[in-house]
Image 1 (tube, rainbow, N blue to C red):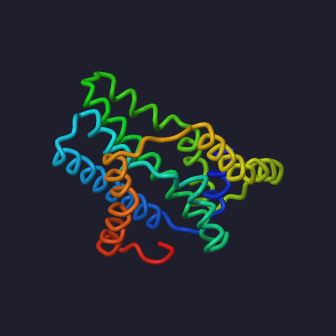
Image 2: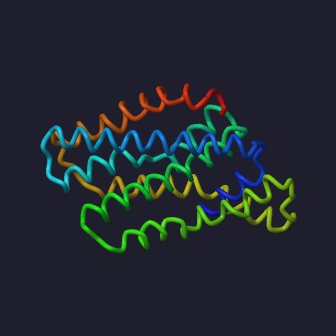
Image 3: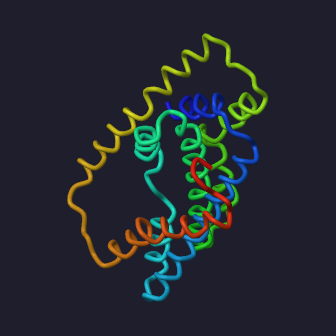
Length: 208
């Protein structure tokens, strides 16, 4: 469902390549800053390298797809969904690359490049290439595949929301210690503030 959703949203979107470049640059900057903050806070608290890695990963990853895209669609309407989808793919790609790279460096693994390269082989990222070709070239997807892709795309958000709920129900009680609260604060409070701070110099405003 996810590749179909990404292709359907991006291939029919109405935005320019410069807008895509600015959005992706903004996402990379925000996530690099969030990772640095998570790393710095963990080291200041004298946490182990394993806990430091957890701080960095929590600072990087967020539920910006099945939940975030749905909320943006409800709040801002269908015209905001393509750009939200672009952010979703870029956020996941950036977070995975930074997260995998940091974890591989921490474990002194020699195969970190292969691990990072595997991120770019995920279907949601691969499908961005034909989607952007259709979008920038002004091509229309043939009617039959367009309808099939549209049906699959419409199933993504309800299915993933159901899966998230199921996973939460099966997770059981969680141990909430100081590290959980601090790391969650970095992700839920500090990272959004960093996004606001970086929005002005990177000229990200409104639907940009």
